[in-house]
Amino acid sequence: MSLPEIDPQTQTELEAAAFRRLRDHLAARTDVQNIDMMNLAGFCRNCLSLWYQEAANERGIEMDKAQGREAFYGMPYDDWRAQHQTEATAEQKAAFETAHKAHS
Image 1 (cartoon, rainbow, N blue to C red):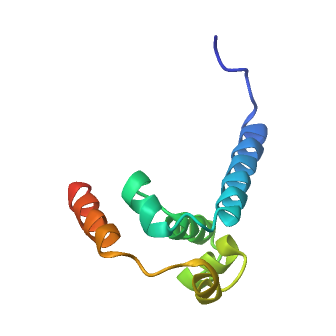
Image 2: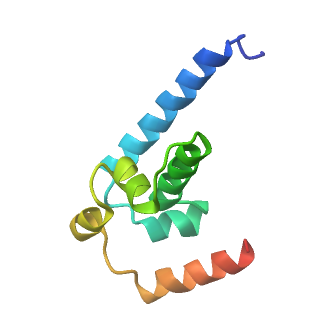
């Protein structure tokens, strides 16, 4: 079975819809900590916000890291952290160090 033929505009719209659904899913799953995502998948919400910022910058839209995070999180990052982020455990930090070394 092959993929249906999709024009470039529709492909962009589908990709944007998938991104929004991922963003919304992660917004609903505040129990999933960024460090756990990094340890398991090699990316987290901060990575997605950075990729969003980079895409804006590539298109001539001035956006800094804080603005990219606010666009992704739907609120200032410090507010999101205060509401949803917990302090990483020693085990999470050790797993991050191990994973980071393996992919550097």
